[in-house]
Image (cartoon, rainbow, N blue to C red):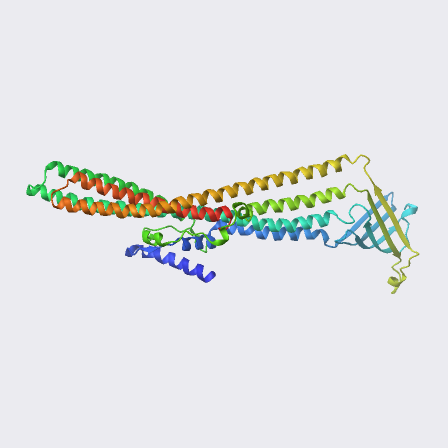
Length: 468
């Protein structure tokens, strides 16, 4: 992929440098989109969403990081040390809700409360704090980590959705560039024909074979076509500038489309197949359900469901048990001095009488999940309808493409017949101009339908979410 991207970028730069040599080089939609996917700053910005998801997981996993703690409390008054209380240790949170602790407590002073008095060397303790009701099966730490993992998956869907939109806009811009560029070629050819006819009519007028009014009519026709060409030239430059908005180098420097870089030719376009893959023949609803924007609602729902479970867990009473084994840090074998006869333990219990806050939180969580579900169903419906719209549009435009190709051939046949009559003196300049204008108009409409056809095909893949 990197080699391919480098080749395409090299191709683009070379084509720009070749401008001075007037060498035309075809810039296909595949090459264009490959550069957009690789170098566009917005794509790189969207890629940061994946990094954001990973960092969110890293942050929430920090809830299970062991941490050191230390508390010091002293009081001195009238040159007396009333008390010196110091507690420090290590706390290790676990996935299943229990917290393990290893610490040291010391207390000295003349006025230490009896309950805080300890041996001079202090006490070492190893303990555990365990929830038995609320937080036993589900706790906040586990909930946020699970939500972080789901969020990381949702960032991938969000990235695909945003890139899908960007590629669709880029393709629409490319085909608009194709549209105005091919129209410019038609107008350019029409000016050349009008110029040659004006010179021929003027020469015939000098020889007395044509009237002055014929010369004026051919000159007015030339002027009209020059006006159309000038307007088309402006549109072509503006379309190239719009396309340049999507082109960047690997060094994040903007590129600009030069005049020697051209879209695919019309004959290449006619050979393209607009038959959709068999994998896209499923129902519109099934296809819409694959869209990353729809998947984002799935992840939002999952995050909301995890939040609801934690809120339901809060309906339970809080009952936490704390147990610590104690020993004095004296001698080299103080670790072996831990005994079940030396311990400290306690129980914490609390329970709101009416549970109004907790019940309200659960009900609000239910409403949020319903809202997400409704939004998801609406999004599936919208995307399914867009798929159908683009499919219907593509079907009609395919028929119009074939029809306009036939019309162009027929108008060309009429023009050739009119030219023969004109050379034999059996037709007028007015009829010649009318035949030419009809052919030019058919060419312009054919080009416009071709561009719309390509946009519609891109629209189908966009509506399904496959442009990435």
